[in-house]
Length: 589
Ligand code: HEM
Ligand SMILES: *[C@@H]1O[C@H](CO)[C@@H](O)[C@H](O)[C@H]1NC(C)=O
Figure 1: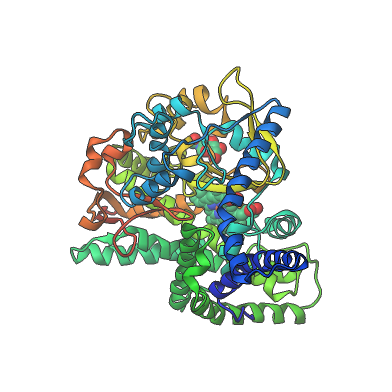
Figure 2: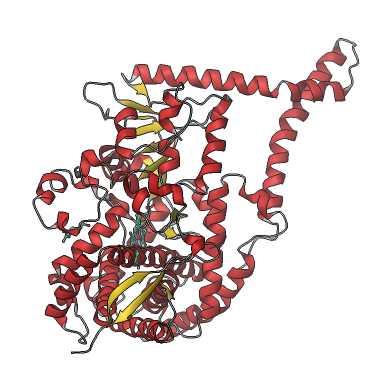
């Protein structure tokens, strides 16, 4: 695969330079011409200085005009502007600085939300982390940060998220920001494209996720076994296990085998793919100017060479085999086919096959690792639920038998544990879209005008915050209580309002791997609890929450790890993300 020969930084600077040089130079030429026509000679340097000096004025004028035009359009639609954060410094710079400084130590989701009240009530200028439900009560669930005069809307409102994902799907795209940051790793695939290209990828990939193909558990079994053997060795030697790390290897190995049929000798590949992903995360966290951080070289390039070296021969091999195979019905796939086998039947385009495979590997690997890590953490925090879950497992499959798809389907308590984990720690806590056209959203408060959303706005939606809203989930919303999925609370909260629970998104772009994920996670938890009967957390000092968290409200006060977010939620640690546990082995039957 040929990769670009200029670094992202150089390309970015060149574009930036052009966008300054071209207007300045043309203004200077025009002014110089006009003045020389009148017989006056003015130094081109002086003209350039005046033109550049006028730029901030021009920008201010632009902001003002934009502001007026937004208000006019909103009025015309009978709508109002989304409530705005009101910082003290121009462009809400104080709020940006505050967010950056505090995000290092704050609880996930607290910074953005907890700083908003002090913005609206400027008299109380210090940002205290108030409980989320209070904040939402004060501000409404949909707000505009408007950092540097650019609209950035965050919503935790189910009806607005429903509009974005389902009812008005065609008006929302993932947008260029994510695509550019991920392009050197993912190219275009189902996870990383919009519009017609996305549709094509989705149509091509969806048939692969059939019930039959995702309910064969040999793959999970082999890799779960391997992980458990490794964990036992360490426990026997009196050591702890970095569960997040162990489980990421398990989900990568399982996904690789499922997608392209190879998993051994993949250590270098695994490391390189993780590193490339870290680069994407870094880019997204820096924002638009990330290329400036990569002046000398593309930070993904070396890692992608390793990925290519591993994957290219596998894909070439599959393509060759397919071209020599006797012609058969291309719509018939057998259950033991990998994704690559499936794709080579549909296209002989090497890049499409490769991008698609990597897209799904990215979508499917960290999400399941994240959820399993959170589940084990929550079970360690709540031994009473662990005991009950173990009872269900033992009565259904015993201490040794390999669970089947039907076993898992009948294990209501296990499913409740997984749902409750996905509610409090959804693997994709924040997500973004951009709207193509001006639109309005119904007012979250009764009797008020709808909200105006100007075209091209960065829209961020948080299922993490929505899943913890007390007005949507009841007074115990912040508690880990799997029974809420089994008792009258389901009828009271979820059934009348299904969009309050969206760990897998909804609508045409709903997660393709949802069932695969439930199967994989259920399988692993069963295998773990067949082998271990207690789980103890032993966090390293570096990953423990700061002591002052204990004085806060809600989950911040009780959490024993620091939840963080890049594309997916993870447990923060100093160097590698880790969540150390010690398991006690179960007696055999
Ligand atoms: C607990 C596990 C998982 C969670 C919470 C999860 C969540 C999500 C979410 C929220 C999205 C939407 C992202 C967006 O549109 O911005 C998504 C998309 C996707 N997921 Fe998952 N996922 C999980 C596991 C998996 C697995 C195991 C696979 C595949 C083996 C997978 C494949 C995909 C694909 C291909 C998409 C893109 C669909 C599209 O854009 O049309 N996911 N997932
Ligand atoms: C878990 O959530 C899913 C929706 O993602 C729902 O269909 C299922 O019924 C829930 N299961 C339990 C036991 O609550």
